[in-house]
Length: 482
Length: 125
Image 1 (cartoon, each protein chain N blue to C red):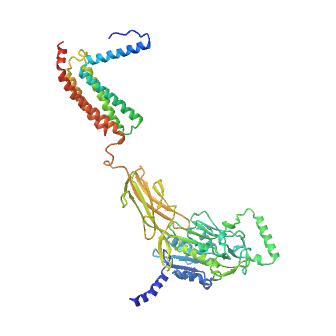
Image 2: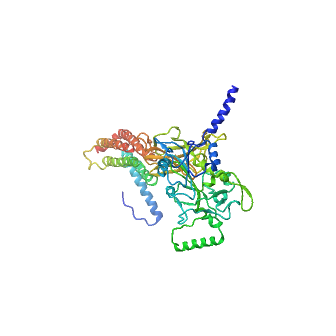
Image 3: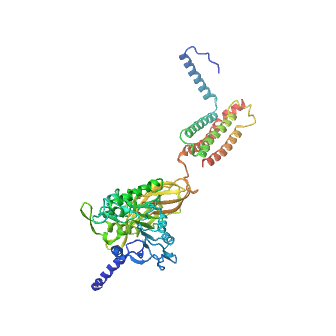
């Protein structure tokens, strides 16, 4: 017994290592541009591998990089690391990527200022709008006040407190990232997110940053002057041009998107922020302090979210029943007391690196009982008495409306950063059957009594009439004789 | 009955009214046969029952209207039938209903009442 367990232990730990933490799958395709040096990002690849992903590296022009084969996804996740690629093999074209995303492929796009026009066009599909720089296409984010001491101002250090979107983004970012060191954003592009409600902004530019070209600041003063005056003139000549000046919160650097099918897509505006140079490294800030960068934590958090490790919620069980019963019915009679119960579970990663489901506790879940319009909208309250091993049960009790027809129990929960939860179950509400009505109506009792009393009195009257008649006979006879 | 003289003062008039009621009651008790008195008491009962039902319908609820129609219809119908019977058997009506004997009138009344009650119970629901 003992030797076998000793043998088993390492095997089990190995299994734990290779088991994916993602709730969907662990096959990752990395599309690397040929001019990107893979070794410069070794820590990022390593972090993905230790989390249990199988990485497959391909080049944009590789013909054998098929995302979907025979209608099945070949990979669960995609890392697009080829912003400068001018042409793609047909299987990696923007169209086939979009197609694969409809089939459930999670994607992270790492983009950079050398983004080609065709790639921009693809990203516009997601409602990302790039600042049209006009003459200079390689405009990047620059901040002269916040950058690591040894680096130029194009390597922007973003403070986590002012640049990360702090609230309402579910579990995209872990608390340690939200309070950690600055995020280094070197040579990064800036874009705007549109009205698309499925887009979530994650990282935006700082107040002191602007969009421009790094070389101006490193050249001598005259040149700078010249360039600035040129820019001003240029602006003056086309003052009514659509050049939008974006900065601060409107200038988005990292964002994410989650479709209705819970496919997740991330957009990171700088490829260099993954470099080993910034991965968990100490940097010196302008005021001479030495701090650790938050890049590793930030990128890990984002990739965990995109690869369906965090913020994933699923419906375990959903049922409805009448008071005193446990099984769902197809038909409910009007004014029945109906209970709808829903069990939700949140995905998490256990300490030994395996995938698990646990309780998901929120207080803003609601149930609609709809027939075209919601006839009843009520809160689903957490039911602590119903103990489920993995998950949280929510219950709502209500009286079925006095409205006959086919109804649906609809639960929709759509919060940024969390999986889109939608549950819909059909049930009919019918009137009472002919033999289910009450035999006597309480309000009608006076009428019942009146009718019965009239009949009884009638019978009594008849009896009295006859008996009186017998006693009266003589008198009547007399009367008649008279 | 003789017509009273118009009263000269209130106390006298109330006393006169009282005495006239007394005569009315005495006359009713002595001259009206027992069967007609029976009819009259039944009529009074039905009259009160009908008033109560209508008050209930107006003040409380008219929701099961068919039940109201049954109950109220039963009282109204019974009242009409009774009034008819009274007209045929009360003294002094011999001239008008010469051919109709008391037994015949009672039998008609009974048959009509039974049919009426059947209808009323159907309406009650």
